[in-house]
Amino acid sequence: MLDLTRAASPGDFVWSRFAASDAGGAMLAFESGFTPIELPGPQFHAYLEEEGLDGPLAERRRDGAEKPGRERYRRCAKSWLAGQDGGRAIGAIGLPFEIVPLAIPGAEAILPTRVLWNGRPLPGALVKAWRAPLGPGGALTDGATRDSLGVAWQGRTDTRGEVSVPVAVDGEWLLSVVQMVPSATPAEADWESTWASLTFERTAEGTPSERASR
Picture 1 (spheres, rainbow, N blue to C red):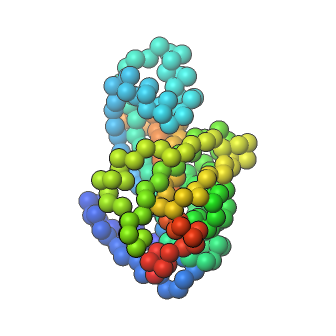
Picture 2 (cartoon, rainbow, N blue to C red):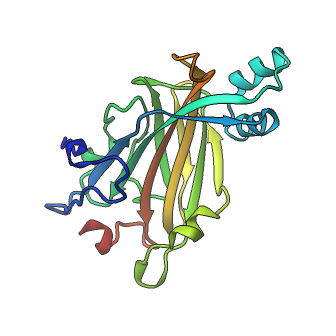
Picture 3 (cartoon, rainbow, N blue to C red):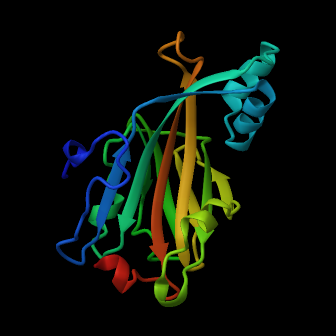
């Protein structure tokens, strides 16, 4: 594992570049710090419903709370650079919250995954998948188009924290899941959420593309 955090400065959009040394593939991971945010009560409720956060939603409804939602959030993102060494893809990295693929992402039409919260399987978590089509020659979709795409699939993890995601269609895939708990710093926020994601590419042939493997 290679830690690149020392190469970063606050506000940098590009703070490191990575070149794979072979065709085995690589899993990149990023963990952010917490950022506070406040949403109006109805908007916060809608957000909880959309992300399947039943516990926090039930607690707010139980309290009859229409007050703004005070939250601080962080991101735990992973990205698979396509390759043939499955061992590099399927292991847990150790993020506070992560989606762990149980097979090489993009290699098959179904991707089995496990969601871990503080290293333990998380049952009942709502996992969502988005897909952006690839352009001519496997070109990536521009950012504005990707950001406007709707959810392609969603499903909840089972008692083992596992869920199988259908990814048969070629494109850029993003899997995402959110976990929310009471905030450890009540003066700053009432809730603390962590967003985990996994991105990868699947080609029409179901094998990693030459561009992604370089």
